[in-house]
Image (tube, rainbow, N blue to C red; front, side, top):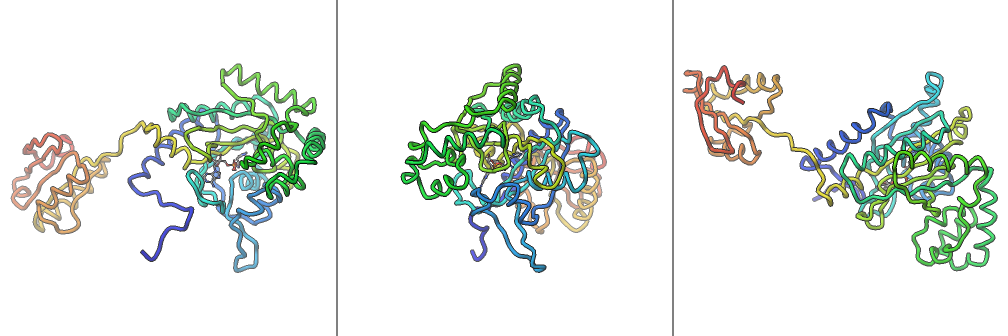
Length: 415
Ligand code: HAM
C-alpha cells in the first residue's frame, strides 16, 4: 500500500463510527441540562496563542506542537488543546459583555507530536467544557459533577476522581522555594527532563513517570500544604460541595497538570483499565488566562476528555448501550422497468425515513439476495416486470424466511 495514515493518526471506519456517534450523543445528553452551549473554533491558530497560554516550559510547547510557517510567513500551530482557542474566541467576540458567565462546550481534533502508544495519539479527539466569568467554588463542583456524570451515563464503573489545589501566584512562590530547597541535593539523581524542570518549572517534576524521579520526590513538599488563605478557603468549599453532592474524590496532593495556565482546583478522572495513559479527563481553574491573553481579569474553569481513551474503556467494558441502525429494506429488482420502479419507490420510502438500499452493480437476483443478507436487511422486496404489471410483489422477512405477497402501493404499511 503506497499511502497510509500517518503514525499516530487513525481512521474511524464505518464499523466504528456509530460508536463515536454514541459517545458524542451521550456526552451531549449530559451537557444539555447544565446549560452549556456549543462553540466551534478553528483547528489552527497563530502559534503565540498556544505558547503563551499553555506555557513556554511545558512539554507541549517545547516538543509536541505541530508548528509550520504558512505561505504568508506566519507561524501557525495545529491546536494541541481547546482552551486557548475558546478563550481567544471569547475575547474576540466579547462574549463576556453579553453575559457575565459564559458556559461553553466543544468537540474536536487536537494535535500533539507525542510518542504514540495505547491511548496516546498524535491526532486525537477531545470533548471539553469551559465556564468563563466566575470564581465560585460551586462552579468547580458543578464541572466535576458533570465529568462524573459522563462516566456514569456511559456506564463506566472503574474510574477514580483525583482532586488537588495548585494555588495561585500568591502562595506558589512559597511552595516553590520549599520544593527547590528540598530537591537541591537530589537534582543530580533526576532524569534530564526533570533537571530542566527543576530550573524552569519545578512543580512539573511531580508529573514525571521515571521511577528514580518518583523516588527522589517521595517526601517533597506539596503545594496543597502551602495554600494561601483564599486558596485554602476555595479548596475547602469545593470539597464541601462535592461531599454535599456525594461525589467520591481522592485528594491527590501530587496531582499537577501538563499545562501552565492552571490555578487552584485541578482534577483528573483516571481509569485503571487504561494502563500508563490512564487519564480519561483532566481540567481545572485558570483564573489568570483571560487576562494573560489580553482581556480583563476574569476567572474561569474547564476540563477536556480524550475520546479515544473513553472508547478504549467502553470497548473493554463492552458498554455500548445501543443498537446499530438497521437497514429496513433491500429492494432486489430484475429488468429495466423494475429498476426504474425501484428508483422511485426507494426515494419515496426514504422520504418517510425508512432506511433502504438497492443494487447498483447490475447483479443477478441471487447475488442481490446475498448482498441483502450481508447487509443484514430486515426485509427484501423482490420486483420484476411481472410484479410491476400486477402491482404486487414478494416481501421476504430475512429473519424468519417468511415470504408474502404485498400490494406495492401499500408497502410502507407492512414495513
Ligand atoms: P490535557 O490534560 O492536556 O488537558 O488533555 C485532556 C485529556 O485529553 C487527557 O486527559 C487525555 O484523556 C486526552 N489526551 C491528551 N493528550 C492525548 C493524546 N496524545 N492522545 C490521546 N488523548 C490525549 C487539556 O487539554 C486542557 N485543555 C483541559 C482543560 C480545559 N482545562 C481547562 N479547560
